[in-house]
Amino acid sequence: MARQLRAEQTRATIITAAADLFDRRGYESTSLSDIVEHAQVTKGALYFHFAAKEDLARAIMELQSQASRQVTDQVDDQGCPSLEALMRITFGMARLSVEGPITRAGLRLATGGVEVRPPLPHPFTEWLDLVTRRLVGAVRESDVHPDVDVDAVAHSLVSFFVGTRVVGRSLEPVARLPRRMAEMWHMLIRGLVPVPRRPRYLALVTRLEREISVV
Image (cartoon, rainbow, N blue to C red):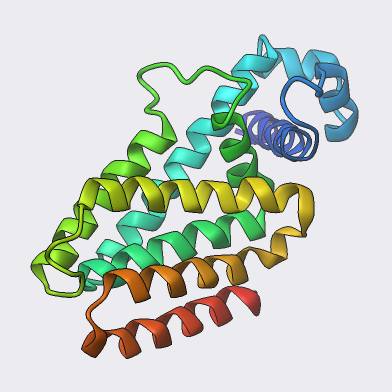
């Protein structure tokens, strides 16, 4: 049991170290030797768990996918209106990016460097489905204008969310991400939400940004 625990801890250490380097340097610019040095493990320990760098990348993307689904499930358990749930999910994912490198690296890997193969779904496909379903619910609940093109809005929102992190990676610290998420939602709310319902959601944006910023 103790040996198994140590093996699991070593594997987690390797994954975290790889995620940090993939996020900061990119997949192509990170070698297995870099990961061994950063994780402070032996090459034998790394190869015991991962036969190739690509296997490490896929493990990180799988963890990111699991974390995203966990955030979604936690929000859904609260029984929020669809638009509020969507907002909470995006801020929850932003929180994951602020708190550790796994989500940040998973996003960077998804934008290039590693092919996403079944059975692992591409994160952008998952997010498009997630956003589309909640936008349909928000239209039904009258929190979003009934004449919006849901597919176009879903694509734009996912692109906005991903692009915010991609641009921010080079220009500003990750701690700025909650502010960028708030800016994104301020614009979206003014374009999507009927005027009488806007104050509630604008106030929610402020609260969600503050919750992440104080972590």
